[in-house]
Length: 195
Image 1 (tube, one colour):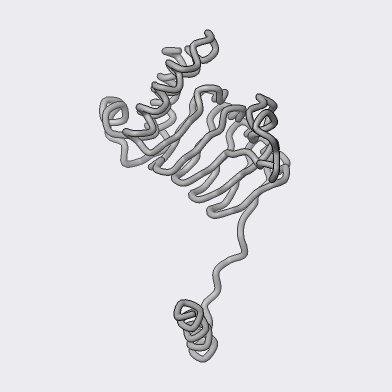
Image 2 (image 1 turned 90 degrees about the vertical axis):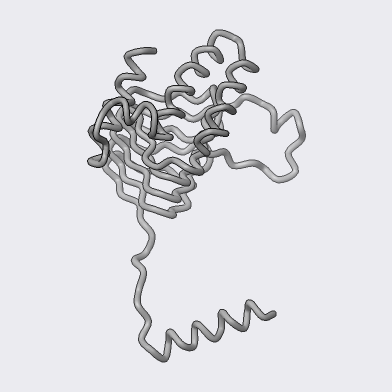
């Protein structure tokens, strides 16, 4: 566990040019604090103490705004940059040297109308993220999809299918509308708000 925590702190130090010291990371970085709590919670979860594990993860969530289920499996060198709003589900598997940013969700797809027993089943329902993957802010990855090694997932992407190794997934680039088109769009949005 100590080796994994050290690797997470090192990943934060290497991944953030603003980091000045290991102490700063351990005390001030929400991602490092959440990872530290997760390493302990996951060990307890694996030892058969799920309630205590959940309590530890909830303490981290309350302090950092990062919600990592203690059942999630996370490899060494994990770095959550900024972190607020990150959610990682129970059956997620995250590889080594993965970096994610704020408001990323590694969640499950739920079937509408599923019974309580089906919803509580512990089947593999969250993403698998390979090694050396970067997932930018606001990305939502749902279901048992696989993100291949060294892939990059762009910001605000909604992803429901596999991504191959070295793949890059992005939204269409934002575009600037000329004066008339921009004005027409603005008027349409104002009308929608009024309705």
